[in-house]
Each structure stands twice: as structure tokens, then as C-alpha cells.
Length: 407
Ligand code: HEM
Image (cartoon, rainbow, N blue to C red):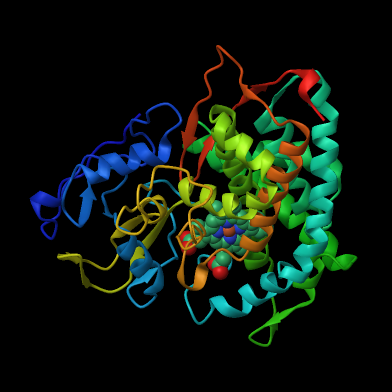
């Protein structure tokens, strides 16, 4: 349900106003990205303002998305969602820290998610993908999100942070409710459970350090001091929410696209060498994250006067789908040259530190799935739906195939 609208402040020109609710706008079928784009394109102004969710600005072209993300002097990530809700969880670290405090925390994660570290995790992701697909391919059907998309990245997250695999179903469920629970209360409750789980793990690693990422962070110093429990829990929450939900959601969009586009599927089955480029093209076409920033100091931007404290919504979707940057942007073309230069992973100092891992998991899905289940479709009669808060996801995706066609 749309939130109530606030009154237009004096600094917002009337011709910039659009009635847009980030959490409740009309999406045609599963075309979340294209629907958002057509709503914004219908208004010619460079920067828009909506009275929903406390009132906020919206940047909508590729250059402005990149500019806001790069300008830490005027745009802070201390608030990363447009919402009027209470945010009870600890700040996600390093995402909600501005420079210069951000860099030392990021460096810790960067080491754990470097291409070298990801090489090893990639092998694990491949084994696990094969195991999962082999487990259901003879059935001729699966519910893709629960049986594959959420399973893979959370299992990899559990490896990175050294958590027992039996906790996986519990964590998957509370992470889902924390991101997309129906009410603010439910989301906050799930967030508190995640936090308690994170805190418990931190205490346990302080007592018995190992070689996993949480132990490394527990032992690390930032600005000459050990990291307190509060930012430490924020780091774990960020890794969990950032690494699980995003990959699972992106996998959902990949699978539904391939299930409904047999000619694209066939092309990758016949030319697996195209998969790395296809991975970039699908990332460009199906960005899932809507980012936000708080205006830190009054600034003139896109012909309007933004005031300190106001929020700006930064839809990553509007970069890769900008026709000035990519010809015919809604078309998926696996031969497109350099499809990777876009904001699907954000930009500036907070650009996704897990992007090497994410790309690896997504590529491995394409490679291993198409080798084993080259032909599949969305189950006739099922109606997959998109659910979106700041990350868009397909909630359930029933896929079917002929068991005789599997390899
Ligand atoms: C397809 C999958 C993914 C997408 C689309 C994605 C997207 C993003 C975006 C857009 C940002 C910037 C947020 C902002 O500036 O407000 C970001 C940051 C971040 N992501 Fe990802 N992400 C993905 C996977 C991952 C994975 C697998 C991990 C870790 C395991 C991860 C960890 C992080 C962290 C820690 C940050 C904050 C970086 C910083 O503040 O310096 N992400 N991600």
C-alpha cells in the first residue's frame, strides 16, 4: 500500500513532482526494471521529487546516478534507504560510513573477497551448483528460488564466515523476512534476530578464533583499536544481506529470462564461450538494487536546490538501461560489446566489494545449469511475481523441463 504523501517543500519546483512509491509502483509482469524506467521517462525533468516515503529526490539518468555515487562531499551513505521507518539495526559497515572512516573496514573485506580468495570459493560454488542441479534434474521441475538461487550464495557466505551449514535454512528465512517482510514490525523483528545471531557468532569467535573472515575481523585493528561489537555486527549483517539477497535475486531474473527466451538459451548452449559476456549483459539488463543517499550539504544538482538532510533515490537500473549509453537498452544481446560498464554494482568508494564473487557465482550458474538442463520453461499456469523493497526479487519461480532432455 502506498504511504501517505507529504507536502511539497518550498525548495521543490512543482514541475519536478512525480507520485512514485519505491515500494509500491505498478510493475508489468516481471518487468521490474523496464516498468520503473518507463515511469521515469514519462517525465522529461532531469531530477524528480516524490512526496512518498517521507519525500525524496530521484535521479534518473546514467550520468547523475554515477555523479551522486561519486560525490561523498555532498551525498552521504549514512542513510541508504528512503523510508520513514525506524532503522533499529546497527549501521551496515563499511557501507554506511563515509570517507575517510570507510576505507580501513573495506580493506578487511576486500582481502577476503579478492580474486585469489574468490578462486577457491568459486570451486566450492561449482561443486555445490552441480550437486544442487544433479539433485533435482531427473524430477523435471524445481522451485528455482528456494532450491537453487538462495541456496548457493548463502552456502558460500557460510564458508567465508565459517558458519555451520545446518544454520542455513534459519538464516535464509530470517534474511528474507528482514529484507521483504510484509510489515515494518516483521522486518525489524527479523533484523533483530539476525543481529542476535551475528552477535552470538562474534562472541564465539572472540573466545575461539579460527581462520574464517569473522575471526580475521575480530583480531583486526582499525585506527589503532580492535573493532567494537557494534560495527563488527554491522559488517557481518552487510555481508549476509549484501551477499545473499543480491545474488539470489539476480539469479531469479537470469533464470526467468532464459526460461522465456529459448533462442538466447540455445545460443549459450551452443556457444558456451559467450557466457562471460552474456553474464555482463544480463547484469546490465537486470539490476536489482535501488540505492539512496542523504544530502550532506546544500547543493545545486540537476537544476534544483537540494537541502542538507533530504534523501536522494539512486536507482542503479537507470544507468544500464539508459539509451544514451546503450543502444536499444531493453534488448538482451549476448554479442553486445562491453556490456559491463554500468552501475549494477554501484559506483564510487562503495562500489560492490563482492562483485568478483557475485560474477563468479552467476557465471557458474550459467555454465553448469545450461550443460545439464539446456531446455526449461516457467511452469504453465504458475504466475511468478516480483517483490521489491530496496532489492527487487522474484519470490517464487516454478521451472519445468522434460526429464529426458537433461544431461
Ligand atoms: C549480483 C549480486 C550483487 C549485486 C547486484 C550487488 C550490488 C551492490 C551495490 C549496488 C552496492 C553499492 C551500495 C551503495 O553504494 O549504496 C554494493 C555494495 C556492497 N556489496 Fe554487493 N552486490 C552483489 C553481491 C555481493 C556479494 C556476493 C557480496 C559479499 C559476499 C557483497 C557485498 C557488498 C558489500 C560489503 C558492499 C559495501 C561496500 C562498501 O561500502 O565499500 N555484494 N553491492
